[in-house]
Structures are given as structure tokens and as C-alpha cells.
Image (cartoon, rainbow, N blue to C red):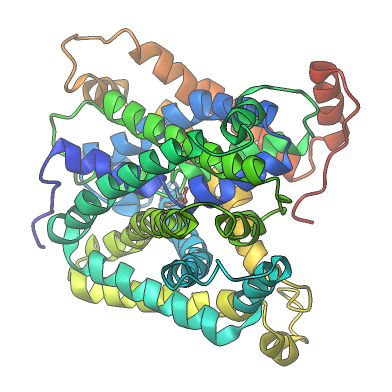
Length: 482
Ligand code: PFF
């Protein structure tokens, strides 16, 4: 057995964990779901989910990793025995990493294509209707999709092969500070945009206006798991490379805070631009890929802003993808595999799974596989969307529920409290009991309810009525992902 690798410093761990958390979820997905759900009230709901479910669960995950110094499946074997049924939780995490990375690589590929377009100054001369054509082109062109996704997977694999210290740590130590600097520059730029764009954006994001759909709560909670990389063992795996001196509550809090701040700043940047130039905000994926480039073309210095924005998105995607690949790789390493062999095996397998995601929007694929109904290839974008839906709405919340119940009820209080107090100067830190309560009771109740609503065991109408009472308006469940 090789000796287990470790982060070189506490900062390296925090940067890597924040790098995993901060990704396409923050800069691409959060702004468009915030827009789809009407702004302020949704943001508030999301912050609530992050605070009462996200923070306790991230600490729980890091704790299991740090206590065992093992990746999910091996960690459970160590704590609960070789035949423990809890091992399923670890295996689900490996499956989730396959599913998420296979569509993540495709979107990251679009980001790389747009970074190339930004560098080559392609947006400035385009007419309004051409922006959606460009996006459509990458969306339906199998080779462009496949080619960029392949390059992205190759870069991710290259970093993960380098190992914890010489690969992941080196990459995040460069990429994360650059990401934060670009973010700050873009926010400063937003302040000086015309037509009070900045002020209007702040109002849109921070003023709760009610009118939430019941489905928003499903989306907010699912996204809380996705954005914090929870429920599939990524934080557990990163925690397993951590020393025995770092305080987990502090580390978890910093990662959650950084992730949340970046998501809010991304909204500020994007909506300031949209409000400043009065462009139509497209729904869904198109917000960043259609609406925004259109405004870059109108902006003074739009060339530089567009490069900065897409580079930011690319760096964010890369540091997350690294952690997505590290989960299955660490699984094999704990089974005795060499890192190189494990990385190639998992990297190539996930790349193969990303091919249907990359091609599923193209005519070529639909013609060839129209008869395969299992994945409804006939329906546009379905394979790709199904992967996102499966991961964000099912696998991650389920994984998060299991880890919360496991840490809350199935590991000893001695182990838990010892882990919790490391790095703190008190024998029994005052926030220990609240953390246990939120992990063992509050999170499982909330997440189970959401899963039951998702599974339609709890009637969605009841949720609508609850929201009606809360915001005083008639709302209907929006059938998202149907
Ligand atoms: N947190 C990432 C994002 O917000 O884009 C996505 C992600 C990365 C999810 C790693 C899960 C994971 F293990």
C-alpha cells in the first residue's frame, strides 16, 4: 500500500475545497435559477438551505474523511465494518461523480469555446440574432461539443494524475487566487455600468418580493448540495488528505462562506450587465451563453470583460471537475491501485460517458438513436438534462441525507466530539451541540421531506398552499424538469 498523501497546508485544503465548491454551479447555474425563480425571495430561501443544511453536512463529510484518512467506501468499512450496508452511500458517490462529470465536461467545453470566441473578439461584430445562433451551433454540433469536452477532460485528468500535492494543490493555488482577483475586478466594473445597472441588480438579488413557486424549494435545496459539492463524498475525500490540526467547523464555514459570496457576486456581475444594457434575459443555460455576450458587444471594454468572464468560468469549472474525478480515483487507490492507473481508468470511463451527453443534442444522435426510448433521445436535450436532474434532485440530496444520518446517529459521540474540537481551544466548543442537532435532526427532516415531495409521496398541492400562506399570493407548482 502506498503512503497516503496529504495537503501541504491548511490553506491548500481550504483552497481545494473551495475550488470544488465554486464552479459552474455558482457562476452559470445559480444566476439562471435565481432569474427563473424571480430573484430576492429565492436567494433568501437558498441562503436558508445553505445555513441549516449545507454547513452541518459539509462538516460531517469532512469529518468522516479526516477521521479515517480514507475515501468514502473505505472510510465506512473502517468505521462500520466490511459488510456495513452504509457502503452503498460511498458507492452512490462514485456513481454520482460519473454522472455529474459527464455533463459537467460538456458545459465546461462550451465555456472553453466561448473563451476562445472572447479572445478572438468574435462578439463585437455580431448582430443580435447571431448570438443565439452561435450557442445553437455549439449546442447541436456534435464534433464541437465532443472536441471541447475531450480537451477539458484531458486537462482535468492531467492534474489529477499529478496527485494531491503536485497536481491538485498546485493547480488550486494558482487558479483560485486568479479566480478571486478576476471576480473582484468584474464586480468593480459592474459599479460603473450605465443606467444604474448595479443598483437594479442589487435590488433584484436582495429584495425579497414573494411570489415563490413551491418548486423553488426543491431547486434551492438541490442546488445547495450541488454548489457545495455535497452528498457524493467529494468533501469527504478532500477531508481525508487533511492533517489532524485543522478545525473542521472553521474550515467548513470558510468554504461555505466563499462559495456563497462568489455565487452572489456572480449574480451581481451578470445582472448588473443585463440591467445596464436592457437586454432580454434568456432563460436557462442561455443566460450566460446568449444574453451576456450580446451585452459584452455593446460595452466599453467589452472585449476584456468577456475574456475575464469566460476565463473565470473556465477556472471555476476546472477546480470543481478535479474534485469530481478525484472521488472515483481515490476509491480505486484505496483498493490498492496506483494513482496513474486509477486516474486513467476513471478519466477515460467518464469521458466515454460524456460522449452521449455531448452528442445528445445533435441531429446525428437523434437520428441514430431515436428508437432508444430508455433515455428519451427523441426529446431535445433530454439525456443531458436527465443527468443534471438525476444528480441534483436525487443522488446528491439522498447522499447528503445518508451522510447526515450516518454521522448524526451511527458514529460514536466520542469520535465526533474529538474531531470537532481539534484546533479549538475549548474542550467542548459551544457550537458542538447545535451542530449535532442540525446534522442529526434538522437536516434529515428537511432533506427527507424534499425527497418525499420529489417522489410525489407528499402532495405538491400542500406545498403550494404553504407557500401561498407564506407569501400571500397564489402560486402553482412549476413542473420543472418534466
Ligand atoms: N460544486 C460544483 C459547482 O457548484 O459547480 C459542482 C460539484 C463539484 C458537485 C464536485 C459535486 C462535486 F463533488
